[in-house]
Amino acid sequence: QVRLAESGGELVQAGASLKLSCVAAGRTLRFYTMGWFRQAPVKEREFVAALVWNNQTPKYTDSVKGRFTIFRDDTSKTLFLQMNDLKPEDTGVYYCAAGLISTIPVLSERAYSDWGQGTQVTVSS
Image (cartoon, rainbow, N blue to C red; front, side, top):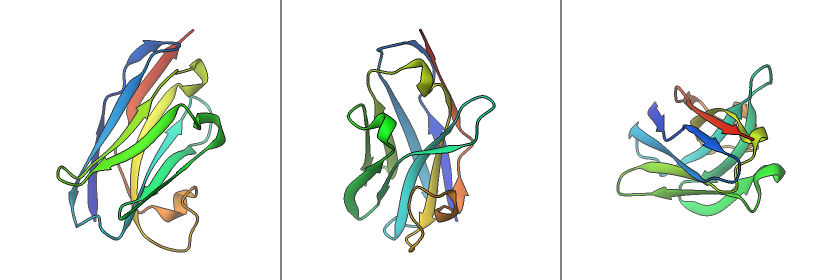
C-alpha cells in the first residue's frame, strides 16, 4: 500500500499558476503508475495526467495539454502537477493516485489502488 498526501490547492484567478504536490509513503514507487484526477462539483471524477514512475513518458487529458506538467522527484518520493494558465473549468478537488503497473489504461480509475484525500483548486473568472 502507498499512502498519499496532496497539497497546494487554493483559490486563484484565471490565468494564474499553481503547483500541486503529492508525497508518497510506504512501498517503493519503482513499479507504480502515479496519476492525478480531479472532480468538479456535480461531475464525475476525471483523469488529468499520469506517469509511470520509472518511465518519464507522461499522459495528459486533452483539455490540459500544453498547460499542465506532471513530474516527480525521486529523492522525496513526491509527485507534482504544475498547472499554468488556469481556467475556471479547472476547478475541482484534485486527487493523487497510485497503482501497480498493469495493462489497465492509465486514464482509468481502475488502474489505481491507492488514493489521497484530495486538495481543492478553485479558479475564479
